[in-house]
Image (cartoon, rainbow, N blue to C red; front, side, top):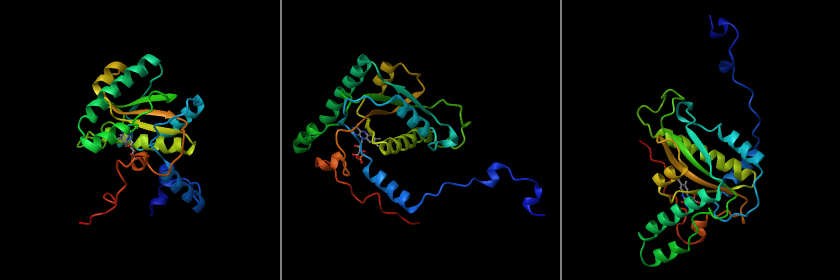
Length: 227
Ligand SMILES: Cc1cc2nc3c(=O)[nH]c(=O)nc-3n(C[C@H](O)[C@H](O)[C@H](O)COP(=O)(O)O)c2cc1C
């Protein structure tokens, strides 16, 4: 008796017919990955709310440990709250700047590392480390995989946004405890990213930090060790 004699297959057993990702699409996808940028220079034009909703829907499809989907979004809208976040950045960035000396310090001072003053949409993205969704599958030994899941989701959101021509800037130069206090989120939420979202002033295939002479791309992470 074969497995198939047991009765009609259920949907998970059958699989579904997938779209044809033809070579043209694959080439375009490679271009999308190549042209995704961290954006810090935004136009002030509004972003249609429907577009943001579509991107948030797509981001829901991102991988997550145990299907926990632990990301939590806070849209930072009021000028007062944005000012608090900006001040948070200014203080954190001053501390970071003080860790460099000489030419590096001078170059650091020239870098633009956020677009909080202009980006029309801004989101603080948290990980709910206390989520019950997924019932702990996969994250018993490595609880930090919940955080990684949020980062993976942001990668999905970032590419989906770029496909629409929309720029994303990830700001991490923040005091996370201060941001949490200002945004009044639950204690168990961990800040993963502050995202600036808007239409970019310019397009580049080369990262800003490379163009400004801070850090080239290297092959360090390209090598695969075999055991
Ligand atoms: C976890 C993470 C944190 C980052 N934080 C910042 C930041 O605080 N400010 C900034 O300007 N860029 C930030 N970036 C963007 C990186 O600088 C950028 O990804 C890198 O220079 C490569 O450029 P690209 O994204 O345009 O390819 C961050 C990126 C990641 C993934």
